[in-house]
Structures are given as C-alpha cells and as structure tokens.
Length: 397
Image 1: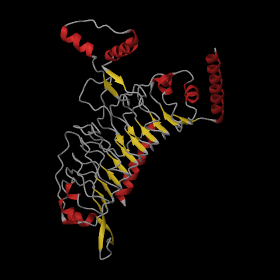
Image 2: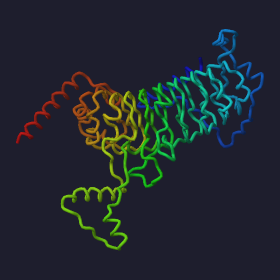
Image 3: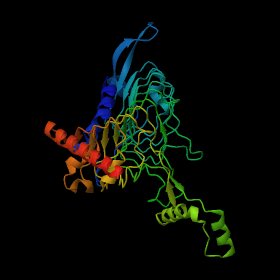
Image 4: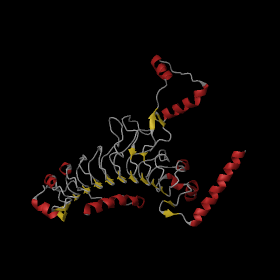
C-alpha cells in the first residue's frame, strides 16, 4: 500500500521540525534552462505497468487490481482511470496533473497521493472510504467544503491557501460534519494570514475557525500568522461620528468611561483593532495535542488557550519573535503542556532561560531539544513554591 505509507510518513514527518527536517518531501525544481517536459497521457502500457495487488472485489464476485502507482512520468491526465472502480490505493505523485475529477467516482478509494503536481482545485469526490489524502506541493488556493466521513490524514503543505473560512459568509470550512474523524491536518508552507493589529487589510479573515473535535495534530508552520488571537475592529462611538460629521475635534468623556476610552485610543494607535479575550483564531480543537506554528512571525501567544486547545502537549514556536516571559505566562493554564520548542526566538537569550521556563510552566518536561533532568525539575519546583509563598505573603500585606 504505497500510497497509504506515503501519507503516513508525511503526517509524522513534521514532528521533527525542531531538528530542521520539517519536510522530507522536497523535490529540486528544474532550472530555467532545462528542456521543457513533454506531456504524457495515460496509455495501455503505463496502466498495465502501474496496476498491482489483485484482490477479490467487495461483492466477492470477481478479482480486480486495487493499487495504482505511477510516479515521475509527467502525466497530464487520468481520464482512463475513471473506469477502474475497484481501485483502493492510488499514488500519482510527481507528475504534471492539473485535474482530479476523473477520480471522483472511485468510491472504493482508501488513500490518494497526488502530491507534487499542478492541481489548483480539490475535486470533491464520492470517497466514503478514504482515510488519507495527500495533496502536498500543488497550486491549491482554496479548500472547498469536504465531506469525507472516514478521512484521518489531510496533507496540504506547500500550496497557496490563504483562508480556512468561506470568503463570503465567514463560516468555517473544516468542520465535524464534513471531516468527523480527521486527526492530522498539515497546512505548512501556505499563505495563511489574519486580520489584526499588524495587518491593515480589512478583507483578511479574522480567524481560521477550525472546528474539528477529533483533530490531534495541526501543522501551520511557515505561514504569516503573526498572532492566533481574534482581533475585532474598533467601532467608532456615536459621539465620535457626530464630531467628525460636524467638524468638531474634541469629544467629552464621562469620568467613568475614561479608562475604556483611553484603551480604545491606544488600540487605534496600534492599528484600530481590539483583542477579543478568550477567543482563539484556531477555532475549537478539544483533542489537539500537537501544534506547530514555526516561522510565522508570531509576536504574541494570545489565542493559544485552555478554551481552544485544552489537551495541548507539544507546541513548536521555533523561528518566531517571542521576546518576553509575559507571553509564556499565557500558557500557564494549559495543564498538559510538556514540550515547547522556542529555538531562534529572542526569548532564548534571557538569563536563566531554561530555569525560568520550567518555573513558569510546571508541567513542562522538555524545552527545545533537551529533556529536563531530575535535578533541574527539583530546582525549578523549589523556586516555584518559594515564589508562590512570597506572593501570598505580599498579598497579606
């Protein structure tokens, strides 16, 4: 089952991001001076050479090939495959395919690997049995509403995806109704970014809004997610609108609202957006244990919270711009967090960095590439308890 093995490899491969091997599926691009590849159509010879694994059909009335593997031939179409309705495993990676539609009626498909092609749209097939779909390294810019009841692994690394919500309604696309069993989602090396204080485009989505209750691993590395918080535009007060319309430049504020108005004023200076507390741009992911947001330009850790990811254990923040322990404090309420990767963040230069991280996150057992030793754990626990007692004493006075 070559296709299934390939999909599983990709699902596990990104776990080694902190060692610098996030993608093992990279193919060197051709140089501009290379001769242009010749288009290849699916011939009888290619089909016969690519079919294998003859097994009984589901109804038991006949035997038929169940596996089709054809790589590196610059295939441009799969039209002739649409009659092979008993295929369960298809691997057509590293070709020149642009269209998946010939496969949409192969309802026995269990896994499909069409990575490293030129596919721009995900054809929504009648695939009730599919568990693995690998479309890494294509030209996909949008994800349609998928209805794949048994899909467990979806690989969409290295595409051109900009949003995970409906562009018109803002409704979530990745939901439990369409993908109830999905446990691994790969979206690294795309163009995901959100509206917020560091973005001035009002047309950007406010959230990723992933609603997958069984998702366990989410890979969002190498995008442009500078924050996972939800930011909402500051709405002008009626008095401000009136002042603008009448040409006035001063608005009176009651003393009771002064702090709120000052905060809104500060938010406007920072881009006109207010942080929506306790919300997360990730969506609702109650089973998520692995999250990778490596190399996104993250400035803060808002949005990584107990409400959105209560079972988070592994968090890869490598190659971002986290620079203060105040941001790490936002992770304190995650009771299962055991591994944090912060390599190549400014925070790593902090004095006693390893100790301070362990004192702040009492559940932490691994930081960057190294596990905490028993001696380090003991030292951190003693210091954390001393600081807790000091706070209690200070509060008493």
